[in-house]
Image (tube, rainbow, N blue to C red):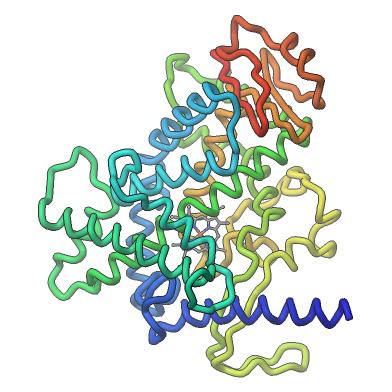
Length: 420
Ligand code: HEM
């Protein structure tokens, strides 16, 4: 009986996912459905290349090296400092808010505090019903998802229209400026609908995935003292080796040299399986192990099946960054699909890694954390982790001259900022 119920449940979930993906990938489908008819995910051929190139303008290596690295560092520092001043924070919420704020700023110069309409809430509604039974009735998650998308699209559209009507001279160009420039070109492929769809999907892609990965990275590192020790060693060595002691931020070379941090990130993304399925349309009949997959079918590739396969990874459920030692730390391969693979490999993979690396770097040498889930870590001259201690004992280990904040019991995670 249990088995029957389970198979029904699994089939139901697969049907729902397949339904969405079919709609997402099929440009001729009802345009009201997320993420929209002209979006990067469903675009094919030349249109896909064109949209992807635009995105690489925003998050490609050159932009990251020259523009994004200081912005990422500033944003993370500001947020870490803010968290330190609070009694406690819900880590996932706080990181998602930070990521959303940053993504919306570089894409649209949107600021939650300056806007009367909440784009973040619209995305929260959209996300709430993203994987739900496709029943468009009042009160259903599916309806909420559609309404969330409609609201988010409305806000993005009004920002776009406003910008086109009153082009101001901003100190710094955002992605929207680039998109509008594309729209003005003669015979441009960039229609208003395409622009809104692109911005809609990018805002979403930029915050939800990275915030999940970052939250899990903090948790994993907190639970593995040796990993934190190694992480701190790497970041302390970088600080020691700086010729200019007044250097204010992380350089591109330093970022590239953080090999252990990159191993931690790969391991976090492998275990997180943030995107449980990626989809491809079969273009011609394919024979696999005696089965024929007919042209036109949609195939779901399941990265967790590879990431958790003991033939690919020893003790696959164990968080062990050292398993990546000496390996190519590419964003995608046949055994590592956290960011997908091939021509559709996540366009923001490197950008997301940059954010996680900078976060880990600041985290590794400036921040102390305590969690009510039984782990905590902090650092004075050298970094270490200790098991959860009764509260009265913890305070004694902190050096009040170096730490800005005293210990306050938090119900989730508490950050402490240390001056160095
Ligand atoms: C930990 C963070 C992230 C994870 C795990 C992740 C994962 C993925 C996956 C699995 C895909 C599908 C790839 C495929 O079909 O083979 C994808 C596509 C995509 N991602 Fe990400 N992503 C992350 C962060 C980001 C960020 C920060 C951005 C923003 C710039 C982004 C933008 C995109 C875009 C534009 C695509 C579509 C690429 C295409 O179809 O050419 N992602 N991502």
